[in-house]
Length: 126
Image (cartoon, one colour):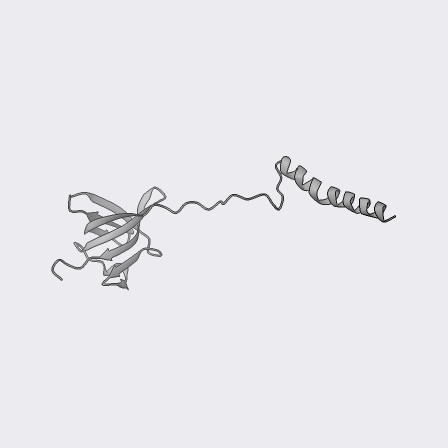
C-alpha cells in the first residue's frame, strides 16, 4: 500500500510540476528557472563642449556655443533637467550671460543635442 501511494505521489509530482515546466520551456513558454532579458535602454553618450555663449534664447530653450577653434554648437536647453553651475553652486538658467566661458555636457535626444549641465568657468587669472 505504501508503495502504491509513493508511486502515485511521484507520478502526480512529475505530471504537475516538472513535465509541464519542461514542455512550456520547449514550446517557447517560460518557467521559473528561465532567465529573462533586460529591457532597459543603454544610457545616452554624454559629450562635452567648451567655449563662450554666442547666442542665448531662453524662450526657445536653446543656446549657441562657439569654441576656441570657431566651431559653433547649437544646443537645446531643457528647463526641467538642464543644470547650471557657477563656483560650485547651482544657479538659474536666466542667470547665464552672453560671452561667458562655459563647459557644457550634452546628449543626443530626439535628434538634437540637449545640454545636461552648463558649468560657468572662472575667468582667466582668477
